[in-house]
Figure 1: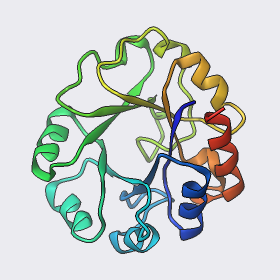
Figure 2 (figure 1 turned 135 degrees about the vertical axis):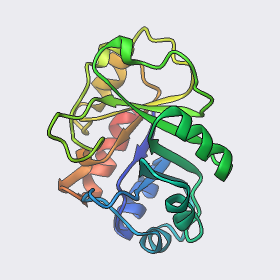
Figure 3 (figure 1 turned 60 degrees about the vertical axis):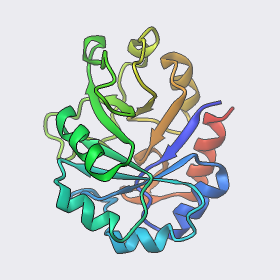
Figure 4 (figure 1 turned 90 degrees about the vertical axis):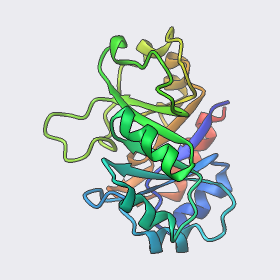
Amino acid sequence: MALVKICGINTVDAYRAAVGAGADWVGFVFFPPSPRYVTAAQAHAIGAEGVVTRVGLFVDPDEATIAAVTDEVKLDILQLYAPANTCRALRARFGLPVWRAVGVAIAADLPTGDEGLDGFIIESRPPPDAARPGGNATALDWSITKSWRAPAPWLLAGGLTPDNVARAIAASGAGAVDVSSGVEDTPGQKSAALIREFIAAAKF
């Protein structure tokens, strides 16, 4: 039974579907180029019930960007696409756990130390023409993490769907998974049915 994060929540219906189906985390994307982008005010309204751990995703943020969000919506974890030293500085500044997103292609790309952080999102490197560092529905070779001695908790992400998540967990050894586009009808439009199917398959 894996833990599950549903990322890119941008409507109350998607939030309630994730919570109702047993998601362990919900993620809000504060990166304007993403079709899943929400403002701080929108995230606050969506997650006002506050019954599940909330993760804020940021790409190369500065302190002011994160502060503008955390002033308006309570976040429990920061998920950052940024260098390790930036992640550590922001962890110290905001006093929140930080998960660093790491794109990998081969086993040698996997972190060998905890980097002074709280966890990692492990996903495939984005395609060369990608406009976003994540959320590109691209799966990595799950087998490369099977024998990895992870230095910190981690979530497997990238290209996961209700149909393949059980196989991905078995092949990768992941204890937690992160999905966004794999539970959408169209980019940025979450499907309550797919959210329920994904969580059920991950928690088999």
